[in-house]
Image (cartoon, rainbow, N blue to C red; front, side, top):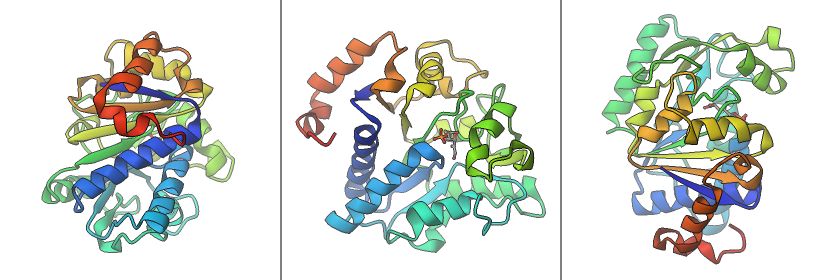
Length: 267
Ligand code: F6R
């Protein structure tokens, strides 16, 4: 695992977008795992800008989102289908048939979860999985005590997650869907490359527990410590509780892998 610290949230998101763009350029038919949430909005804004200004081509890519609420129609303004349409799908040249989210309205939700795993497998697995981290340490909607080998399934959301997401779901935690379909921790760990973005001081404490604490199902993001190729991009505000800050800065400044990005004032 590598942690990279950038001066602010804009530059951290821009670096994430540039890493995604480089992966698409290296493999135009990339299978890309996507996340939602406030942190990702900047990443999608940057990807749209790269598409518009540099011709970044998504036409051969396939995407799989991490999760969707159960019981919200796709067209609901609060669904993740609609979030993705607004933030990315309607603004770049992804083929609609090649974008996938779980269907939270499926009549048989367990069958939908199994089908989603089949679709990922049939696409050859996920090359690059984009991730955020919740205030309770979740990745996807893998709430505390999610099995670290879990697969795509239904999950009850924690009160902390309902409170975190209520402002983007009409404001009232009591009116929010209580359950979601989410890729499992095991599903996420099978992606060939994981790329997490965490920004803002509100994530500092949980980020330190996830990256530098023990691997525990209580903080499912800590399972990323097991992943052979995982990059965590954070801003200074989210990094304040990390014990290894100086080492992480030194990695970005000196490792040849980061040379293409070191001198870029936008990153
Ligand atoms: C949503 C998802 C979640 C979010 C996390 C952080 O698809 O995967 O794990 O990444 O809840 O959300 P924000 O960015 O809103 O703080």
